[in-house]
Length: 158
Image 1 (tube, rainbow, N blue to C red):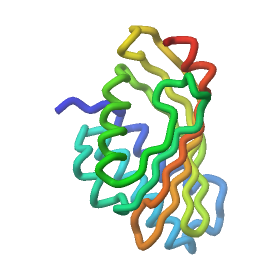
Image 2: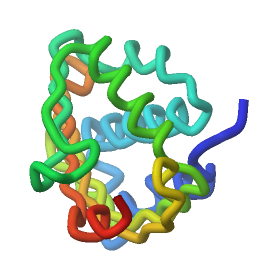
Image 3: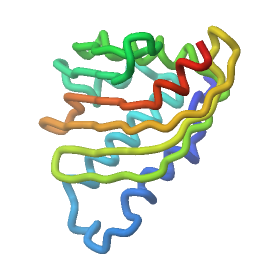
């Protein structure tokens, strides 16, 4: 099974979480939530989407914020539906080269910002865009994922 995300990208989550925070060693809940986000990225990288059901709450909501014309934008609810949406979305991307810029975690929330480059499979066009992901946890599982992305960059390639 080919990986769709470079493992180096995933390894940078922990580095970014520790960067610039002298009290990071005391943030046990936050560290565990970052580890779960890292685990989700690893499963996606291996295209093991079905295994995400161990990380996602049954009542998870996945929201991609973008203009109505933006491919992939919208809200999906329910574990099975979110997994199917993620699988479909990643099937539209090839040659993906994501980068982590920062990780901020407080309590039950993890926010990851970064940049992504790749090719949009339906048109063959390359893209570069910036994004922010927000993950909210409840009882150790992701209950809400929100992605804000540079939809203008994505609209240029469709």
